[in-house]
Amino acid sequence: MRHEHEARARRRRYHVRMAKLLLNLRNVPDDEAEEVRGWLRDSGIEFYETGPSSWGISSGGIWIREDAHIARAKALMAGYQAQRRQRAQADQAAARDDGSAETFAGLLRQRPWYVLGMLAAIIGIITLTLALPYFLLR
Picture (tube, rainbow, N blue to C red):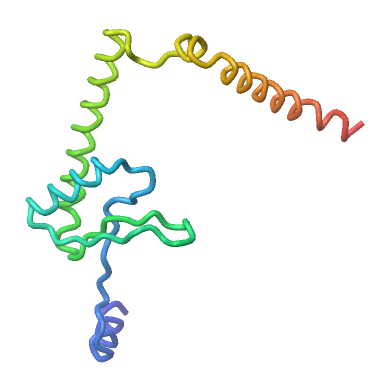
């Protein structure tokens, strides 16, 4: 069945193969995206990038062109993400050790009205969630 489909595709003169998404760029920092582009180029893996859509539905992504490079790109991505996670954890531990890490108490001291407003909103939502069924089902 698959060979039949490929034969029909060759007659129509288009590729059956499609690019594979390596990295969705939603909420990806610019430095991370640039590092991924860099090691893809250094590894000789052909890729292209799509930008965000004008309606905000898609954030764009980094796509691998060749099926032969997918496994290698995913392995490199897994290694890169493990290194980035270790770096982030080390940075967080260093910030915690030198006292510059953001804490609840620190945020409460810096922005007390914001914290109290958020707590009031959370309590209000929980109260409404628990009380509304009681009043509607009486």
